[in-house]
Image 1: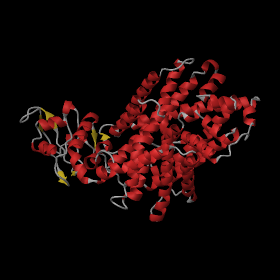
Image 2: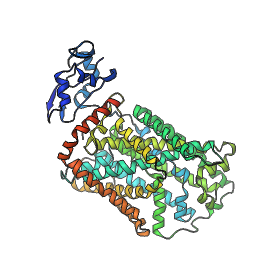
Image 3: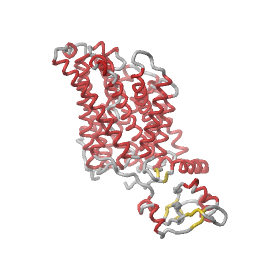
Image 4: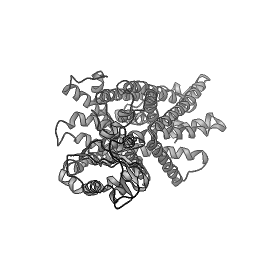
Amino acid sequence: MTVPVQTSLEKTGPLPPALLESQSDSSGDNMHELATAGRALTVFCSPYVFKSVLISIRKGPGKRGKYSVVGNGNSDNASETLDKNEKTKGVELERNVGLFSGTAFIVGTMIGSGIFISPKGVLEFSGSVGMSLIVWVACGIVSIFGALCYAELGTLIPISGGEHAYYMYAYGKRDKMFGPIPAFLYDWVGLFIIRPTMFALISLSMGTYAVKPFFPDCEMDDSLVKLITVLGILLMLFINGFSVKLAARIQVFCTVSKLLAIAILAFGGIYKIIAGNDETIREGFQGTEEDVGLIATAFYNGLWAYDSWNNLNYVTEEIVNPSRNLPLAIMIGIPLTTLSYALTNVGYFGVMSRSEILVSHAVAVTWGDRMLGVMSWIMPVFVSISCFGAANGCLFSSGRLSFAAARDGHFPEVFSYLSYTRKTPLPSIILMAFIGVCLLIPGDISTLMDFYSFSAWLIYGFSAFTVLFLRFKEPKSERLYKVPLFIPILTVIISAYLVLAPIIREPKVQFIYAVMFILSGLLIYFPLIYGKSFQRKLQPYTKKFTILVQKLTLAAPPKKADF
């Protein structure tokens, strides 16, 4: 058995006792710890810059134990254990996401449960059929504006992590103490509220509609729904941890399935309209709301269905030719989603009345009962597949956020490690899945929705402002894609409106809690992230935890981001 072990070090910090022991007696019990149960394991420690010197460990009689040194870094067997890049720079993410899979990733994560289950929110708060269609299209345009801002940031700063990477680049280098705060506060809210809430809500919808066909006429048991949801999360965890290619293929399959469902809804409704069932469409703008606060709420509901348009920015280091494919995938994916949503609503209006849509808890399922007869069961199946694809994409991108935050020291370092064999950020994917499961336990997680919408558009607006900030600070930086200047300005204004309008219309204590939670991240940042003395006190415990996670996941440190 050959085990890669780094033995030549350039010291840049105090040498840990565990590593000293493993060097002084590489054939004893400590080496046995590194090669537990016959599994190859590379253990790196971040305070060191490692040279590419490897030794081979063979099971057999040594001085005191089961393993002895039989080779060095020049042996062919040892050299074959890691490729040249991994020897010198660590494990690297692989580029397996092309234009087609990237577009499927955007469409597949945007089209989740919202358009199938609760388009009634837009209709209720906009007040009329005509205004609701305008809101759906306008939400698509707003999403395109935001995504184009992210396209410029993603091509200017081509590293994974989305907002974290952009804030660290734009502000982190400006001041050692205060510069990283925007990125850390985003990590604080994103890793514990925004991403897990989205993931848990979509996964719960998946579980609900996976069970629905078996209980067509009666109430479903809540514990059964949650059990199926947890099993679905475990399946997503396996897919995302096993292979990036497999996750991308699953995403393509789910995207094709949901586009097929949308085609059935749209063409079925259009057929009914042509056949003369146009009463709902003919209502037009009758009853349109004039309260701007209610219109903002309608936008919130619509934008929830469009959310995740920025997910591809989290995986930039895994995109083939990101300077070309990232903007193209955005420009193809979001207009396609906008068209799909508009046609789906037309399909609903061709079959159901306005009042029927408002009282339905699952509009697509009610539509299927009306139009598909004995085949009505396929709609819950399509909704479940749609939710699975959206949740799968959410877990995929959320794992990259945790990975990027840990790589920059905003999270325990081990969550930046990559599976040595699979080249996936397995520790961070496991963490995100675990948090998602924990959010399912209390019961009703819909109470987090107000916090989610408030925080999300605060972040999107700040990201658009970051585009303007970098245009001013770094006007000569090469930008492979450059968004027209009016778009980030307009995105900042729209974001401010979406954040402030609901607060002005209906002040709630939840908004105060949201601000308090965001700012409470500073209580973590200064002692644990910026404060070195506190970090040193925790080092013995974090080191043990790191080694444990490495043993369980066969994970190794990543290659340092080139940018």
